[in-house]
Image 1 (spheres, rainbow, N blue to C red):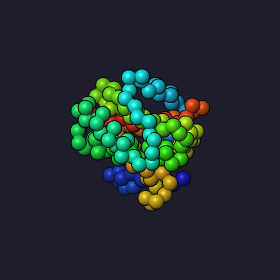
Image 2 (image 1 turned 180 degrees about the vertical axis):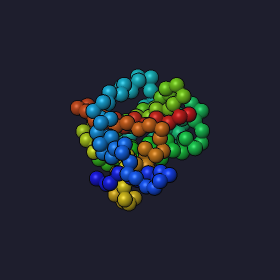
Image 3 (image 1 turned 120 degrees about the horizontal axis):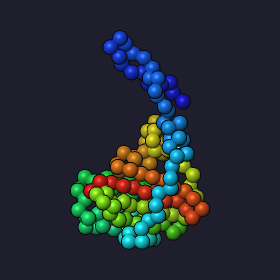
Length: 165
């Protein structure tokens, strides 16, 4: 763990008294977390059949455009979904399914697989030192989406991405 960051005051620099490390903050949030609701039955879904993710990007783009997503948000969503789906195909267990639906002013996308991934509490919250380090992709996903949640349980793993339309 690193030293608390310093803050600049009128009389000089001092360590922050209120600093909480990302690892501790994430652990506290996880202890208070309530599992998110199941994917709605009304969600459009695509079963991922190949490692070529063109079909996933095409499916998500068509669904997002039909709901009026802007081009910048669409680009962010496509990059994030591609990263998460690639991880599910590479490290998870089939079947892998991508589901998408609208929730108010948000577009929500779940990537679901049958694996039992247990991410480190701070994974994706702290930028890795290098783009080749573990966790770089999930850190990028968190930067691209308004919200990203991970849930691993006996039935598998769900990564839920939420982006404002």
